[in-house]
Length: 235
Image 1 (tube, helix red, strand yellow):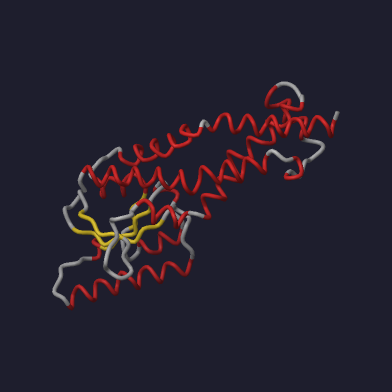
Image 2: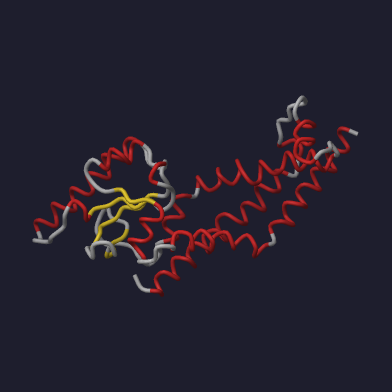
């Protein structure tokens, strides 16, 4: 993969987060988090959590203890999970394969051989039924290759997992591994791009997208709005 293609992946990732994640985070998650009715407040915990976090139980502190877990945890993880397939499509725009059942084809820098790759987002993003489907696709490609006298080995058919660590792979991926390689995270990106640190470069680029909208102000405004409602209800 050349430098132009690497840069394209970085730009694709940033575009995905701008279009699919950031605006929804602001207009959806933060807006909902600024309204008290969105919370199922435990009366035994909300002041305790505010004191634990800030050392006082003023309305702003209560609001901060409620808002931060919501906008930095559950809501963004749910939103990202729902858009995982869009991430795959966005990252590899322009790099698709014409082979049925294969997402991308590339030359692996570790062995110089062409790989036929099915892409998956994370270490827990396939289910039991996906195992058979993936293996059948790979078997079909190898059978077609033999028919056309092409040298395609078992190790040339791979599942590429975009993010995560080896130790996090689910049992479903491990079943696939009995037949074909599963390459995850940093190792996958190195094999694809030839850059050992590309995975972390990609993570940094995505993180920078939040700076474009000064998200810290959005969060503070959310806390302030909720604090006013808390003050009215609990004064």
